[in-house]
Length: 322
Ligand code: ACO
Image (tube, rainbow, N blue to C red; front, side):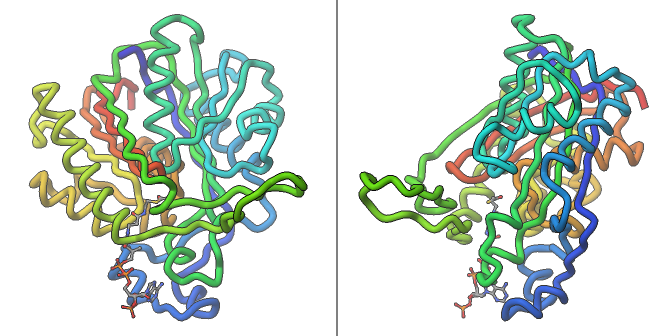
């Protein structure tokens, strides 16, 4: 598995929206949101574009790696909704960074960062690219229906990046998809004004069957992590940090208790950021990296899940000096 992480970075919008703020928009309460999800506040875009946030996160990752931007030969962006339908978000960020290498997006919903690691490991192994800048940038506030209390309280905006090159850090990685026919978690795309198009247009707002997604999330996190650890002869106790998609504190707790691990091994950004889709995992990784809690040689288990339904699990040995 040919990959190592040279540096990480992240960028959040300025605007903080607390649970109390949301009570002025929809019929909800701080108590409901905190007990059901663990979220206290989230950051929401006002005037910043996703391109600006993504570029800021990318520059922070380059600086953290001590690398020149010109050394990057691929820009990959994970997003469910960029600033434009086309060109891709990766191209927009690349322009902002004044880079000129290939750039494209992948959309694996909230599991996007793990899917990107899988793709990068393959690219780096073949030598097709030598340094890949992966940016996860998500504008969930543009996808939510702000009159729907069952979804708008859950999400936040943000971007994070990781600079990758060939190495031996990635122990193993697994992806899975359980197609749900777009029934459990989706946001529709507009049909446009074609006079030939038949059929009903789905709402562009995010719809989620919370309870079904919850069951999938617990299964994907717990069974996915157990299977990956077992396959690699690693016991749950040997993992130093569990980095899970920051969707819901109860899902994190279900995974933590089933794996019989202490709280400090499951770091959180959920309380201050909400669910930032594919950005959540690299935002968490960056916050751990910058807090000095990651030590060279430590084992990191990652797990993310989302629309598709899709999920990805990865085991990495941190290979960066403090
Ligand atoms: N405030 C107050 N009440 C609310 C709110 C709210 N914001 N939202 C829903 N309710 C009400 C419902 O209307 C319902 O009321 P009723 O009993 O009178 O009908 C009641 O609260 C319970 O609703 P449930 O949907 O059963 O609540 P649940 O305990 O399942 O929690 C939640 C909902 C938090 C969405 C949970 O199902 C969950 O976390 N699911 C997983 C979501 C997830 O992980 N998504 C991540 C993947 S998707 C992605 O990352 C893009």
